[in-house]
Length: 147
Image 1 (cartoon, rainbow, N blue to C red):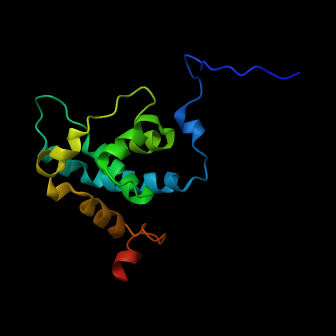
Image 2 (image 1 turned 120 degrees about the horizontal axis):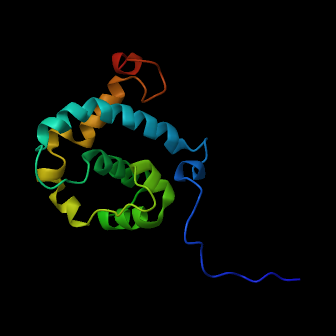
């Protein structure tokens, strides 16, 4: 007997987003390395942002989203935000839960001057990552020493 196709999805999901990402997915290792580099940049972010006022989009999320944009060849920030809206892998990588709202597209228009200052840009994260020696899989500092 042929089953009937249900068109309405469940209202709630009881599977965590972490469980949906395969353990062997390459972005898991990249996220771990990026998180380590972002941890080293945290003092810089703390200096650059005011302690009072309206909260901004965390610069860590903007930088992780920029990495996704580069890795997957996404042509624009609007297309990136579209992917973040429905792609669970991208949401996981950036640190958004399935219920979290994504930021407004104009956030990227403001980025160079206020959201992510040049001193805390992705190049700083890349430099920090390379100096850790993890970029090419070699332990602590060997990659940087051989360049």
